[in-house]
Image (tube, rainbow, N blue to C red; front, side, top):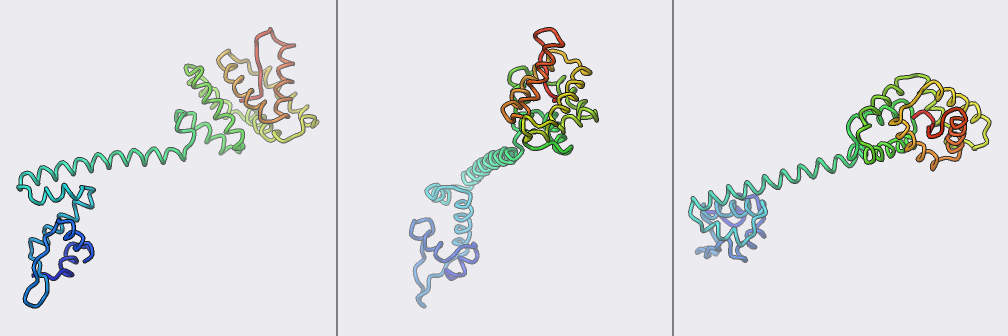
Length: 249
């Protein structure tokens, strides 16, 4: 026979918990023996372990009381159902964990892996986070407005990142973000960008993406606004109406 302390230790609970289960009627409280102690049987230990396990699994106390008085087959079926419910909850929590982890990725929530890889590649090449965010926003807009051009634009973007001259101009534009719009260094940069524009003919799909990037660039920096305006003016003089230009994407 067990004392209340021994019973509690057997089930891994506190004496206070045992007394609580007495109070709510889940575990019968034995009468005191001749020595004035309450002694618990082995069955009381089994019942207490069942109560604690079911309670830890989130089973309401009222249902636990019913299960303790159920027939073996009924109890086994109930346990199977409780286990299935726990598995569903585990699956749901696992999905929540995956979604929470994805939040840290930011762009991976809305952009395909190939585009996320491009953005990470830009970071590794030394492009500022401000410019990466502008590029990310342009990709998101393009995916929403003109998704069928995404595969071609991904190929073109990777080709640009592979090209040393394109990357030199890209990084130069990135560095010019905080320049004064009248900084004489912009004149040389505009000349270099214009030469790049002449060398690289663009199809309509690519021009559409460049409009998205250019609009974001214009909002971000007066120096970039001057670059965009200067290149657009030169292109208008050089090419038929309706063709748009912008700094290397």
